[in-house]
Amino acid sequence: YFFSRLMPLIFGFIAAYCSTLYLSKEEQGVFFLMLSFVSAQVIFEGGMYFQMQQKLATLVNIKDDLIEGYKNPKISALWFKSITFLILASLIYLIFTFFLARYMMSGLTFQVIFNLELFFFLISIRFVISGIEAMLEGSGYRVYVTRIKILYAFINGMALCILLIFDYGLNSLLISYFIAIAFLLFFHAINQGKTLIKLVINGIKNHNRFSWRDEMLSVQIRLGVSWIFGYFTHQSMVPILFYISGPVVAGQFGFLMSIVNAIKSLSSTFIAKESPLFGSYISSKNYYGLKLLLQNLLLRTLVLVTSLIMLSLIGLWVLSLLNPDIFSRLPSTMTIILILICIFFMQINLILANFVRAHNKEPFMLIGIIGGIITPLSIALASYISTNDIAIGLAIFITWISLGLIFPWIIAREYLNLLRTNID
Image 1 (spheres, one colour):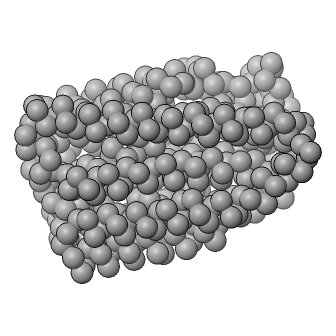
Image 2: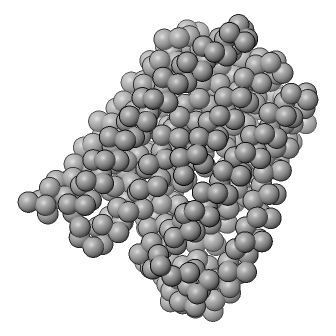
Image 3: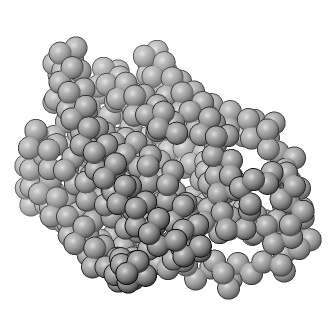
């Protein structure tokens, strides 16, 4: 499981390094602009997917095979309605990103914009596939999903690096993503296709045995709103800087954010692996086990984040020995340190959010909306007023500390106090 998240980090460093060698500074800006839209999927994984995972974990006996589970009308109805929801959500995402890109990249060539739109289409397909994988994890197929993620990361990363080296330029990201998506569709069709089809068919027949509206919709709407504004909070930096300051500055911060996103993804290993257990402990009223799980998860995550940040700084230093020009493709050292420190608060926020959402609640919508408004405005104002990247870094640092630690702690305190009360 850890290796499935380590793989993207390794190839992320290699691809980022290749972009400094084989792309111009302007092309690097477009390259990381495209990657910023891919990163939106990570936010989905921490939100919408999590609730579907939890619901299936409570319905499917982990000792049973999902191949037999399709005979359960409630499970199959949940699968059918979840996949329907994923498709609708992916279409909304596609429309949103399509018009956003049209507005922000109107000055670029038709070919670049067309490639970006094709890229959005592939991301929307990946969104549906990732949702299905999340549900498979909730149904007890963790080993299967972990293996497919390792293979996907290897194929996507290897193809991207090879295409960059062979001077495919900005087309490299589009082609590598297409190859990886095609592989995923083929692999899942061969291994789980019949089971998934049976689940959907039986779900259509028994669609009234599970009410998405009563059991899922209200929380999913709140998660959806949180996701949209969460995207603005965590992934809007590159598009905003691209629009205000140009592709060169956007490329510098895009390079940095690719490192941040890789560390976030890898340091979320324990969170993604253990968070589904929150729901099991809550449903069984095992509050002592829940407390130990929460404490252990927090400690291991913070140790992992610290290690990854140190390794990333060492990695940048090693790359600078091979390519002295690499630091001209990044913001200043002080800005790098400020942004990397923010990862601690992001991961604490993610743990608290998953802990609260395991109670089938979503009280983080308001803070998501506030963050989605304040963060982009702060970045835009800082980049408009000052050309100094430290000003942009400070704006991000202040907002992310407030929105990633202080307010989430206030929200989660009620549920943490409830945990202490039940243990006492």
